[in-house]
Length: 512
Ligand code: GLU
Picture 1 (cartoon, protein in one colour):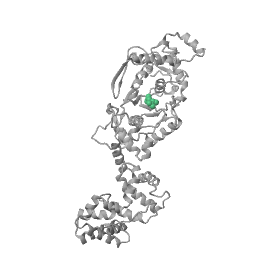
Picture 2: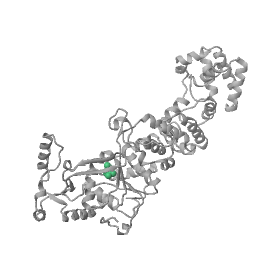
Picture 3: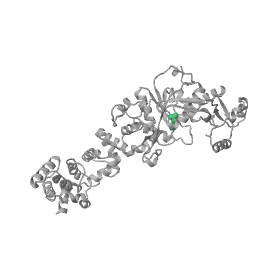
Picture 4: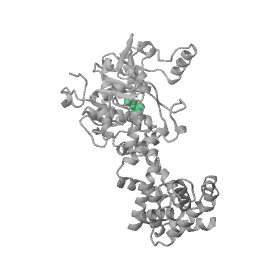
């Protein structure tokens, strides 16, 4: 039975189910590193039918902002990482925002103070700085050397009563502190290098390690899964669990995510905030897929494209890799492209349309005919882009027509100088010219007619036909493009689309 002072006595009953938490500080946008932490917690909880808790760690009052708290919840919701307890939905172990839990920290601090395991420190900032500099100069790792430990508790109490400012520090024991990390294996450090650290600042607010332990214990967290940067905090936290006589959760630290150049991931490596990935047109399931693969791989076969449901099923902490993960934007693009192809077409149209509207390529209040055409264009072009923000450029490339520049390109010149190319181009233009509406069937008939008329086949037939419609040597499937050009040419679009008929006529004229 746990012995901690829970504000929720009803939860004393031993609960063996898995409880994990994501505990972001709302001091900036969620980025790749902390989202992967959230994700691994979520996957683990969902797989084990446990609880995933969202706790807001806002004890740094100067840097925490409400808008970041809201943004991070939006980002998590968008990614589909739903939580079971949290600031917005409450739960049995709330409140879930640390600034709403200060009374609780004070109670735990009193307990340590009364047990003689914590003491007031009256050292000034300048004094501590001098001590730090001296240690650095001597080549040792700076830590508080415990000067105020010697002050008798009665005297410390008197000085406090007289209004003297003081922090509260934990009395660190001697020896080794260690644990078996679920990812990194056994880890330990000599308590000597830690030093009595601060639990409560002089204004009475709780310092991170202290608030974290009190919360993880009160929230009955069974597994603490977080970035490897926190390993040094974990030693401190274990000493706190010991001092408070609380049972330890298990710890799993996740390796740092690096850029391809081996440097810590930063703005310079491109988009790193979730908000930005969302704006650029990455799908949440693609990000989930890619980020899960950053430090983990499924046990069976080498599958890399997995749905969130499959990831939940297959995820295991045992298979999390301890070597640094490398964030590769090209791989993310490939994963996103695969998910774009798999996704429900109606959803893709809904997500993609704003990108075309913003770029002024499709009218915002389109009539139904134009909307249908735009949807078909999206369905056609989506196979050619990595992310939705690339769609406008792909759209423009596909639907704009510049035969002068096109025909001047060496690869197009090469096609035009092929045997019989000009005859094919002329015959194709003439055939289309006689038809009112050029759809898939008419295009097929045209190809057969031109083939019969000119005797050309294979690339000698198809390459010139492509040039006559696009003035380019390569590009998307003509049988899909041509009907879209025909329909587009009849619509009130911001940028006029030219039909295959008019294009072919123009190319024929220029080559004549
Ligand atoms: N607020 C801490 C952070 O954002 C959480 C650390 C933890 O998970 O314990 O890094």
